Amino acid sequence: MMKSLKIIVLLAAALAVASYGCSKEEGEEPAAEQAQDQPAKPLDPTDQTVAITVNGEDITKGQIAEEVARLSRQLGGRTSPEQMGQMQGALNQQAGDNLISRILLQQKITEDGVTVSREEIDARMVEVKASFGSEADLTNRLAMMGMTVDMLEKEMETGLAVEKLIAQYAPTEEGTDSEARAYYDGNSAQFQQPERVKASHILLKFEATDTEAMKTVAREEAEGLVAQLGQGANFAELAGEHSACPSSQNGGDLGFFQRGQMVKPFEDVAFALEVGKTSGIVETQFGYHIIKVTDREDGRTVSFDEAKGNIKTMLDGQRKQEAMKTYTDELRTTADIQFKE
Image (cartoon, rainbow, N blue to C red):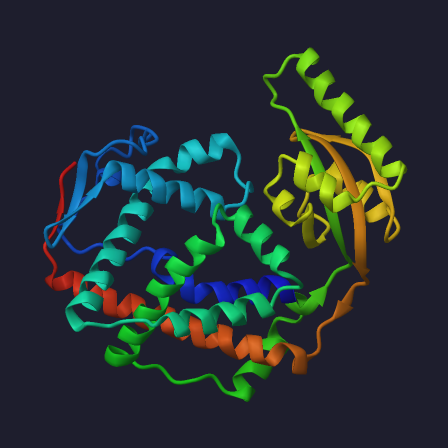
């Protein structure tokens, strides 16, 4: 749980502007609500048709499609394609609301001349990186969210500016130790850290539509790599040269993960391997993997002293989120928001 709590705490400031939807004002009728009896269609990311204007600033259908894609990535594959189809209208509306909120806040930031220095961004990045076991852990977690470090820094700059803006117009109080203790005692299951392993892998990718001949080529390459590893080749170097996973940039390092975070064939092998051992070829729907386990942590209960700082930061973040939503809703009451379709 502690890793997920750290992610929530330390990435929230960077992503806050894009992480919630605002209630719409009376008279506003987004397209997603105009035809609830008909399933909404996915939007085209290249569509430059204006869907909404916010104080004269346009939001295109393409921008909404990109925001829908970000929201979909947040679901982390927990939703089936059928469910995603049923949710399309709601996702379109959520994405539009997110973009309206973002524009209103950015317009106010510009109007007030709020700025964020490079030093402030660097300081926040130090906090984020320090919370992960390695920079590779951060990079891989961002990759799962469809982000890069550069993208995170850009979002972080906006998030820090929003923090300053909200602190000026809707200041919040810091959480106390007693509040943190109450949260810890009332959510004990969240502080059970299950067994975790740290692993690297090499992925020889194939698609479901590939022919058997194409899959055979990928498997033969995997067999060749297994043979090289058996002769003492460096795993990280081979991963950097041959793996089709973004983790190849970090020698194949996937960081720590617990059961349920990887597809089952991969997970079963990773948790069965001893530290320092390398697997044979493991097939999943993504392709052929070669896995090396580099560390292991037994399950345990995270103590209150360990968790207190993160809990207080999380509670403070929740207050800031609520204050930001309230303030953004106030901005909407005087904004000129027009839904074109």
